[in-house]
Length: 307
Image 1 (cartoon, rainbow, N blue to C red):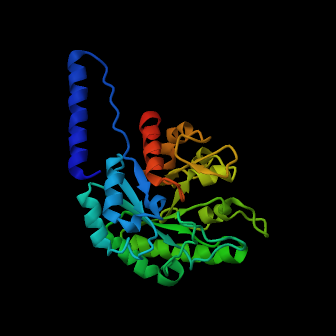
Image 2 (tube, rainbow, N blue to C red):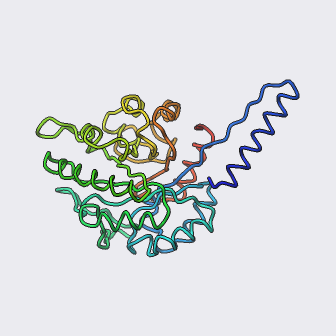
Image 3 (cartoon, one colour):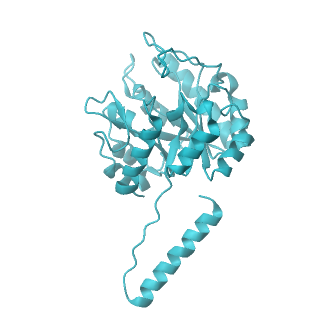
């Protein structure tokens, strides 16, 4: 939300309240929280037409965006300031950017996802915090985003977890110096018990400084792991300024548009203040029809969820 829009909304709210007082009626008005979108939802198609994709995102009603990886490299083939200017022209607030914590590699036994034509996805070389931390921090700061987020990092063994926490703490310090807020985005793997009996997410919370490293809770991945997001918020109040919204079917195996699956988002949103939520981003990993998915999600959110 830019300053002018915020000022307008505040002024409008004051007028509504004043009118209600003068008429002797109770005032009731709600300013809805901006709805954000994680652009990984369009990973397979956005690079073909970045401006066209973002234009449709804005037209669907989204006002905040979180960028991710691009097959073109960089910020969808652009420099940070170029992408910022494009987003601004489309009245989209670019809030956050995702980066890798370590060099990308597929998990043992996993296969590369396929593109719509059935061919294995081909990824460009991607920078990561382990090897390119300062460059990634500097670029995000240049782009003017508020948040830099580690999208994932190795946590499958005690040794990997220890190394990842070291990288995260180092990045958090650099991000703070650059005026950014650093955060960590989870999948379900971080909640699985390791060989030494530890749970990675517990250590990610306890062995990093809450003043410098926040959490972007992917609600669906947490639910898939058997966790209640509200419990996490209560145990770590104020540490979850960012959320990811996606839904899951009854099997908890298939991702669905928000509101079309089995997750009850209402009690989660009711705990937004406890979480410290500032922005949330709809995300749908590799959907068959990304535009249909984001339109379905925002219709549900606008009708059923408010903060």
